[in-house]
Length: 597
Image (spheres, rainbow, N blue to C red):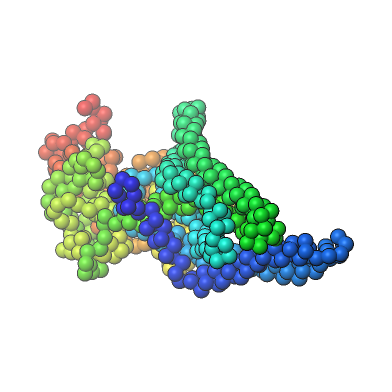
């Protein structure tokens, strides 16, 4: 429990983080063993130094003879220590990291897989850069904790325990003198650890916020430059950078306190040992020799070196805890939309019937407002349904609940009589193809972007999809044809070309239900004609929903649905709705004739 009475989830999450090394326990054991081997020459050095000093001091003869005696005692150990130390150090660091890097790989993979299954609502509330920051930066912040905790901290602690036992077995009075300043470090650590962890968490959160902000601005650099907003954005980033600097300085201040406490503790401890040992030698107490002073001095330095290690370790440890907290915040987020227990595959005909039965929907916000209310609609197999209405009427929202990007709050949606909540999401989304208003292409070749519709499609089907989408002619006119690399979101291609590649992708997927979200609204006349021709081919033999702002596409629709503030205001064929003189007729008149509203 923490001081405020809440459970200390930080350490628990860190142990969860470290549990990912379990499949690689063999490498952890090997790394630990080589670390123990590395300890042997370190612990043997002080007694050897004592023996050499006492031998040199008590031996007779010239100075050179005495030095020769010391050298003959030292050089075999020096050679042995150098060999063991180098080999064991390389082995310890490398073999331990085999477990660490494999565990980090598994964490990143599983976290990415989990993020893909979280609902669209989760992703729309967070900048993509912030999410990426947790997958990369926060996971990386805990990477070195594996070696620090499993290997280094264990070894440093073991060395300290061995030294303490030796002290008390050898001379309990000298042991107490050597450990007299330890409480100073323990008190400082107690006072500093909690604010340091908070500062580490604030630093990580600020870095994540900045990452999301910068990612968004770089993705929208055209808009920034078009509005000459560079200076305003620079000021905003400067504020963020200054805040990050304050958090980082606070973090390093607390770390400096720990290091200062460690160094003062070690200095005072070694000074106490020297004075106490000198007094004993001069008083001829307990047979103390000059070599004993060096032995206790070196061992005390090694003992207090533990505090140096933990002072530096503490900053990384607190950062790792903060990173683990943020990573497991995502891991512990339960997908809002999941397959129901016993969900079955969607078994729909081609083309299927779709029905909306008193559908009600609210976006999952802190203060949810009704966006769709009592939507009841029966769509026959193979119909083309055009959804029209003012902006904010609910057209896009209605199409977002059909593939279960969001779950409805009431009512039911059925495909060939099967409730969407009773079928698997994978089979449902495989049955639905979407061509959005602004389709996104991935960085890669045009071929790869079309193949995204169905990864196992043979070459002839990919080319057939491009031809059906009126895309093959312009693709083959490019310098590298299908192997032409396109930038993020399709940079390097025109809007019409991007749209036709997206249509080719939908052709290759071969869905039973098609959703077209104003797919021609941003195109010139020539591109629009090519895209409309391709969309007409794509809609053949499918149940199609078209979100339209240009009402001309409603002329050939089997059903026009007029939405108004989340309600269905009118339904019917184009001619019938015009004859009624209602909302649709008013929209038509305003758009086609230009009459003021």
